[in-house]
Structure formats: structure tokens, C-alpha cells
Image 1 (cartoon, rainbow, N blue to C red):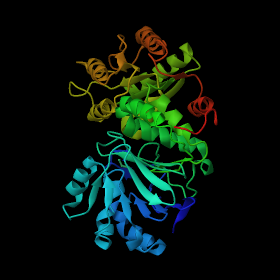
Image 2: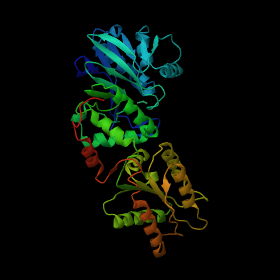
Image 3: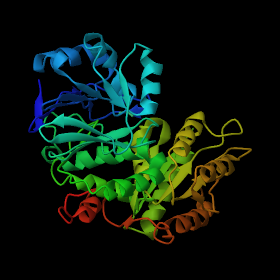
Image 4: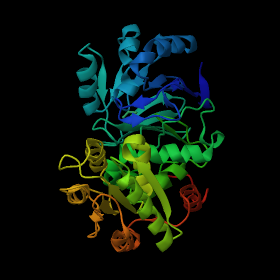
Length: 427
Ligand code: FEO
């Protein structure tokens, strides 16, 4: 069924309540998701994006119930990744002559994934327009590397809708569709998790792109991303959030992540948490066992933190493989402006703390000189080391270099800086 977004624009995507993994097994989905596709029916009819291939038949069947497929004049592919282009092959078997509008990189992506079928591609660049009648047009805006080389957004004039593709999305299934009709805490939890795990590596580009988008002076009534809730109420709140998040964002939080073989390093992690609480009771503390926690959730907490402490015992003259993998993922997310410290117990040779410190430095963290490495298990003589390490961690270094720093609980702090309607809805 089609769900009206505004006037002649409707949602025709797939709400995926059962999805549990994304990007292979790398991203753990906890609130469902959606693959948003939109239909615009003016004098000309345009379809924006499709859905993931497992839902191809259902997508095309549903579309046929809404419209005679032959009436679709244009297909807009904002992004070639499989979750949005997966149903294109099935759709194009029905309407092979329908022109496809996308970036040059998307043509390579689509033909690479689905083969050469003589589809009628039309390459678009930033500022290119497509007239759809009734005095409305589509304007294309390249969003290169946000988060793929082929990414772009499409803007619908008159209705003032920005189809923003992956940007501003969340992995969140909602039948209600709009941001003001879902639980706000969950909405922002998923939006932050999505940003931290998918977009943060490209944060410097996001800052530039947001500046470019603003320079276009486009009035925005709705931001319609490719996943999750559509931003209808105060849509620029998510743009404001992205400005903050892409600028070395942090809150007064320290995340402790550790692995433990026989409980000693786990005990040490708890002692570090207690010491943080003693030295700075206002600092929010999150503590995770790496192999027992969802890494995407943990990384969202790392993203919000101003510092992290990572612990691992020495194992086989190295660190446990669960921690090595976790650190590789941490490195790929390119967090900036955060401090880190290392800790871990050992039985005879030791060495895990040095390995952790090196890895954390390579991941872009400013690493505390003090590490805590007790023999066998933490004892009274380790207390002063713990105090020194925590003291280094909780020092606020130049308010996150140049970023933003919030002392409140995350949702409260986000709501505070978002002050709805503090600006006209012009991006
Ligand atoms: Fe939602 Fe980059 O695909």
C-alpha cells in the first residue's frame, strides 16, 4: 500500500521488522529498519530508489497495486548499494525502457552488481534538474562518499522535500513513518548509532557537504531518508545534529571496554569505573565486556564519550582475538578528539597494555601515559596507578579540541541544543 508523505508523494518502501543484521553481520539491528522508496505522481511520475533484493517481488507487486508500472516516467537511484537497488533488476524486467537517473559512479555500481542490460542511464550532477510537471522539478545534489562514491540526494521543489538517501537515516522500523510519531529517545539512539557506525568515518566530508547544502538556500519541509523515520516535524533538527556529530562530538562520558580470561581484568575494569565515579561523579560511565556486547552499540557509546579505557589480559604473548577484532573496527570508524587508556592483568610475560596503547594511538586516540598492568590480579599497590590513569582520562582537554561538549545525559543534551524552530526551515 502507498502511504502519503505529502500531496502526491508517497512511501512505497519496505518496513523491515525482522531485520537483525546489516552490512553482512557487521551492524547489529535492534529496532528493525526500513528500505525507503518514494513515488512522486505529478504530470510525470518518478520513483526514487527501490528496496533490498529479498523483498523485490513484494516491492514490485505492491507497486503494481498502486500504479500501472508503465506510467513510471523516471527512476531515480540515489545510491547503488544493494539495500536500495536490490529490486531494480526485477522492476526493470517489467519496464526495461524506463530511464534511470543517477550519478556516473552509480552507473558503474549498478552495472557491476546487476550486469549490462542496456538500461537507459542518464548521468546527473549537482544542480541538474528534471521537470516533472505541475511547476515542480527534481534537483539532484551529489553526496559523494556519504557514504559511497555514488551517493546523491534529490530535492523536490514546491513540496520542499529532500530525499537525502542514507544521510539522516536510522535503522528503525516504524509503521507511523514520521519522526514526531515515534519514541524520541529511541529515534535518537538509533540515529546516533547509525551515524557512529556508518557515517563517522566521513565526518570531515559531512561538515563540507552541510555547508554546501546550506549555500543552496533550499526551503525544507521534509527530509526523507532511505532508512527509518521521515523527518517531518522540525526537519532541520537532524541537520543540526549532524553538524554537531561530525565535529568531534563528545559528552561527559567515559566508556570502558574490556575482555577478561579469568575475571581479573574484569575486576580491574570495575575498579577503574569506581575511581572515575570517585574523581568525577558527574561523568557518565559505560562498561562493556567486549565479547559479550554488541560492538555497534558499544561504538555508539564510544562515539558519545570523551574518553575510553580498553582492557585486555595478556594472552599468548598478545591480546585476545576478540579485542583485536574490536580494535580493528574501532580504527575503521576514525573517531577524533578522544582520549584513551589501557589496562590488563597478566600472569607471567605481560605486554597487553603496550599493545593496546599502540593500537589505540593508531586508531586516533590521545593515549594516557599511565597504563595499569597488575600481575595476576589488581592489588592495593595498583590503586595509585589506577588513580593516575583515571586522572589523566577525566581531564577535559580544551573542550574536545574544537568540538562540542555536553555535560548532560545524551538525549537531554541533544534536545537542548536542538531548540526547535530556532531557525527558518532553510537548509
Ligand atoms: Fe542504505 Fe548505503 O545503503
